[in-house]
Amino acid sequence: MRRPARRAFLLASLSSLVTAPLAVAAPARRHRSAPEMRGVWIATVSNRDWPSRPGLTAAAQRGELTAHLDRAARDRLNTVILQVRPTADALWPSPYEPWSAYLTGTQGGDPGWDPLGTAVREAHARGLELHAWFNPYRIAHHADPGRLAASHPAREHPDWVVRYGGKLYYNPGLPEVRAFVQQAMLDAVATYPVDAVHFDDYFYPYPVAGQTFDDDDAYDRYGDEFSSRAAWRRDNVDTLVKEMAAGIQRVRPGTRFGISPFGVWRNASTDPRGSDTRAGVQTYDDLYADTRTWVREQWIDYIAPQLYWNIGFADADYAKLADWWASVAQGTGTHLYLGEALYKTGAAGQPSAWQDPVELSRHLTLAARYPQVRGHVFFAAKDVAADPVGAMSRVIADHYGRSAKPPR
Image 1 (spheres, rainbow, N blue to C red):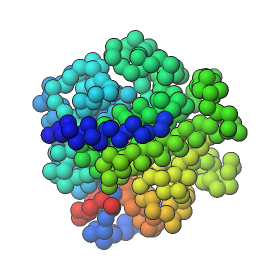
Image 2 (cartoon, rainbow, N blue to C red):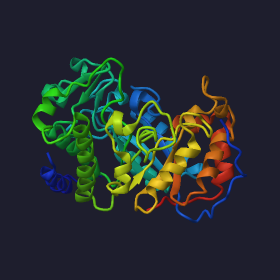
Image 3 (cartoon, rainbow, N blue to C red):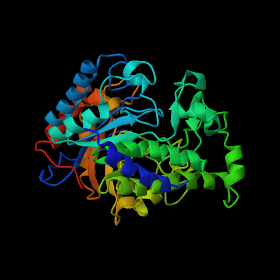
């Protein structure tokens, strides 16, 4: 049940916000009483995992959601990471942003139930943690503000919006944008006993060839003290991360904060501190997300890098990246979980390693060599259900023979 008085009191505090495969030994069975992250992402953007399509009845939506939760519990997973703000919208009755179109087919359309509230309650009833997954700055997968709900903040504040790559984004360089998106996200934290707040890999958008993210005006206003626009952009993202961490503890102390970035911080050819990779994207340089610093400085409680490559992949070897991330996390209090590309298993066009149902199980076997790796998260729920080539079943048989609680 919603508690308006408590919610109002907690939200009042927000006014202070600123502005190719390697031979691997047989699976090593850990002592399953030890805490271990066994998570699954449930993506709502574009109806990827849930709901299966927009416009289902409330009962049908609820039934699909609880089926995902039932499956996670049956497979001895312990955490679901539910995307509740995919495109500057909401899967709860938010006073700041419209209902998500992925529910009803119309942005702002009331679905007749409370998906996030239900998800928290039903997950907890099954012994699962519920991590609320937010995307901070993405507004729409199109570039027409007129297609947004009439009351959408992006229509009320067109100066907050940047068109880029055929999509709409909030400008991370504006303090008022940063304050607003935190307020909108923290509303959910104030209202529901979520176990964690979760960001994915989208901060500044992925580069689009031949296009420029137009933040000239914001840089002119706020970038004087920085050596470059890139340094200013990284500071904008760092500030969001630090402020959000503080806001979560202000609103609901004890709630954790985790981020699942693209798996390469920087290539070693760019920075000797980087990984032995040749990735085309580097989060530090292209998304302005200094993920290594967030771990080393312990600004976040956990990091779940998306290591969406097979063991032995030339440009980004899962084995090399697992080793690199373990070295980054060593000596910090930041938990390390590895993001796993279940969606690639059995998929057409993927390297042959992904046609082997044992590939993912090999990942967990390899990662067990590193005490810094405290578990894994699988992308994503639809693929857990379909279980292409039996890869998830093999993971469960090899590694999840007993239940385990998530790390705290």
